[in-house]
Structure formats: structure tokens, C-alpha cells
Amino acid sequence: MKMRIRKMRGQSIWLLCLIPVFLLAGCGKGSGKGDRETLDYEMVAEEGIPPELKTIIEEKKVAEFRLTYTCDGFLYLVVGLGQQETGGYSISVKDLYLQDGSVCLETESMGPSKDEEVSKTPSCPYLVLKLQYREEPVVFL
Image 1 (tube, rainbow, N blue to C red):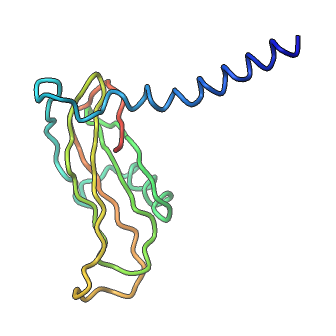
Image 2 (image 1 turned 135 degrees about the vertical axis):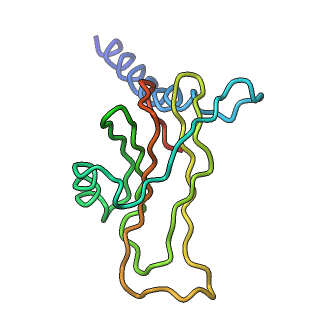
């Protein structure tokens, strides 16, 4: 009986290790261009963010976060860096595409350059993208 429990426990641990691999498998770079479709999006300014989403962002913005939000036939993708000690931080979109049944968003965060004059006030940079609603799961890379 003990041997059976150990075997099951070992299989469970192995399965838990494989789950992230399967979840991310849909957003690999791929070997060809034919297996991914670039998606159109628009960057949303502060005044264009739906009120309920704005409230959610305000609650989460002090810590790093990623979230999706749907409203009126649109899908919003939000990436936040969390609270930074100064201003001058930003997030850029490297790529947004559909691949193997998943919406994949690649972003890059950037800090202030050494010669840039920045505000000494803490900041909480975030990025909001808006695209047509999609059913596919979203993977933040």
C-alpha cells in the first residue's frame, strides 16, 4: 500500500511540473510565419479606460500585475509594473498575436535612461490594450 501511495505522489508531482509547459506551448516563437496571426489593437489612454476597469487597476497597481477584462464586445489586456521609486518607467508592446489557439502578448518594460531627468515621485506604470473580443485564452509573455 505504501508503495502505491509513493508512486501516485511521484506521478502527481511530475504532472504538476508539466502543466506550465503545456500552457505555454501554444505561444512559442514557432519556426514559420504561417502558424501565427498578428492581431490589431489600440493603446488606450487614461480617459478611454472603462470605469470598472479603472477601479480594478487602481486596486492592483502597486504590485506587478497582468489581467484581462471584457466590456462591450472588446477585450482589454492590462500589464502593470507595480510601484517604482521614480518616474521614467514604461511598458512597450513587442508583439500581440494569435498562435495555436491562444492570444499571446509580449511586452517589454523599460526604466529611465541614466541621463534622463525623472520625477522623484513614485510611479505605477501600466499599459492598457483594446482589441475585438476573442474567446481564446490569453498568455502574457
